[in-house]
Amino acid sequence: MSMDILEVIKSRRSIRKYRADPVSEEEINKILEAGRWAPSADNSQPWGFIVLRSQEVREKLADILTWGSFLSRTPLGIVVSVDPEVSSHHVEDGAAATQNMLLEAHSLGLGACWIAIYGEEYEASAKKLLNVPEKERLVCAIAIGHPAETGRTTRRELGEVSFIDRYGSR
Image (cartoon, rainbow, N blue to C red; front, top):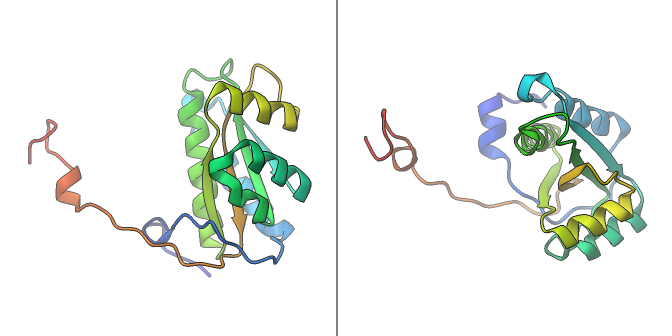
C-alpha cells in the first residue's frame, strides 16, 4: 500500500490494541530504516534502536512503564536510545527518529504507539533491564503490531495554531 506522505501523517493514530500476528522481518527492517534516516543535529545520528522480540522483556518493560502496560500485549516493541555526548540536541534527534518509525509503521498498515520513558527511576530501571550504558538516555518505547482497534482523534483548526510573523498574529 503506497500513501502520500501528508495522508500518512494525517491518518496515523496511536494504537494500543493489537492482534497477535507477528510483525515480519521485512516490516521491522523498514521501520528501523525509517528511524535511521531521520534528520539529526550535525548529522550526528545519536540513536540506537533496541528491538524487543521477547515477550518476557516486553512484559517486564511494561511493568516498569505502567502507563504503557499495553506493551506487554503487543507482538513487537522498539526502544529508542540516544547518546547525549554525540549530539547537543539528542532528545530532538531521538524524537525525529521515533516519528519516522511511527509513520513508516502506519504506512505498512501496522499500528504503533509512542510510550515515553521519563523520570530517573523509570529510566534507570529500563536501562538495567535492557543493558543500556549509563551515559545513554532512553527516549521512548514504541509498541508495534497489527491493529485491533481504530484510533480516533481530533485536531485544532490550522487557523488556531498558525501565526504570521509573531505569535498570535493572524
